Length: 161
Image 1 (cartoon, one colour):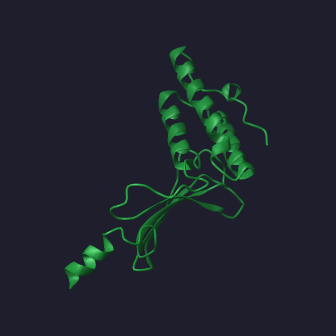
Image 2 (cartoon, rainbow, N blue to C red):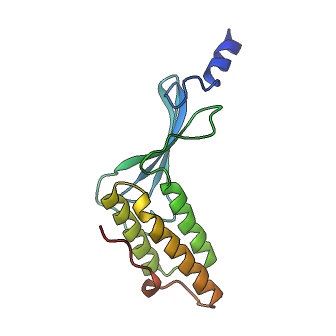
Image 3 (cartoon, one colour):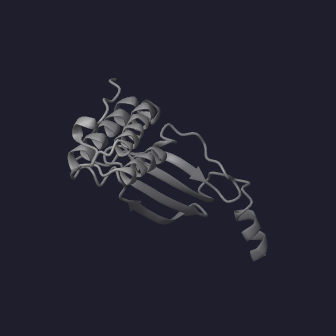
């Protein structure tokens, strides 16, 4: 019987349900990422990670506004397409840009503020795609040009909503 239960839970038959799944969420006020794990409709794990984005901003005085990014289940290699489906990848792109060239604190804070505003105003990660790409391209160009750092004046303008 335990083998049958284990096969049932890992089958993906009830994919993306709290029967056996894990969620990734992003707080659109801070850029923190939360990971939640469910098994048999019970939350068994929940932890929040700081990110390149969240560590750039000063302490937020607003309540978290968690938005679903991904949901995964055993045996299922894709997630439903949520409105913030690409948000964690956008954070990772900025983190990689920060590994390419050092960001001055004011520049990093400005990038974080613009990205968070784009997420909040656009109610999706899509409005921020162009901005994140421009930041990454600017970081590469600055590094290739021998600049010592990514300065606040180098931050590209964000799309106006």
